[in-house]
Image 1 (cartoon, rainbow, N blue to C red):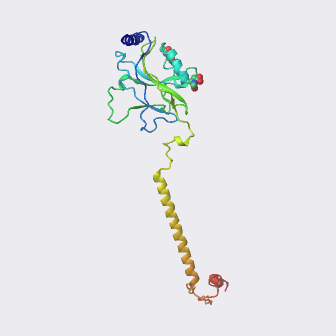
Image 2 (cartoon, rainbow, N blue to C red):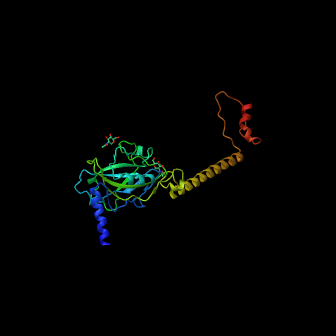
Length: 265
Ligand SMILES: *[C@@H]1O[C@H](CO)[C@@H](O)[C@H](O)[C@H]1NC(C)=O
Ligand SMILES: *[C@@H]1O[C@H](CO)[C@@H](O)[C@H](O)[C@H]1NC(C)=O
């Protein structure tokens, strides 16, 4: 077993020297479940590659950390191509799924941005959101991923000064990450229009208040009508100066027609 470990170590060291990327024993992680929107229709929140590449290529301060996003074809393609020079400017999102490659380079980051150990406030999670660049401004833009697609992702260390094999380090690929598909309302838990318990309670209270208001209004109407029909005295009509017309102030025969009656006189 000891000799096997030595062989593996030798392979990694020699491999790096011969242009085969050194593999670090790290698999990018999706941020914990408590983070909202860790996987959406078009984005995935990964943990940042802090400390991950620190042990390798220590003298390469110009090296950049990139993210590779691949579909299942792209995973195989990358494995075939990684020992040659890869032109990151050609392997973009736009070219990834139109050509034969099925993978692309994005989120180029200076090595020292991922400070090790992380300087985060305890409890804060340092995430890298894949698919968050809207609108797309950079050449290797981090464009929203195709809705409902399935992808695997890994970080790589690229030495931009090499025109020979330039991928000098790589992590493992994530498991396949299945993005959410658009029209399933059960899976959309961040939809702003969802009905919360509070909203239901408020709606019920408003409905009850409205009912009470209508009931009061109906009661008032009934009360006014009943009083009206019991009434014997009508308010005295306005008399204009010079008007000597006769009128009934006590109309017991046809109270509801009293006004019309007066008009007909
Ligand atoms: C990489 O590709 C870009 C765009 O196609 C091109 O301009 C550049 O010269 C290429 N770089 C190398 C080193 O081949
Ligand atoms: C991955 O992308 C390539 C390139 O566009 C495409 O040919 C292939 O069918 C895709 N594979 C899957 C599994 O979607």
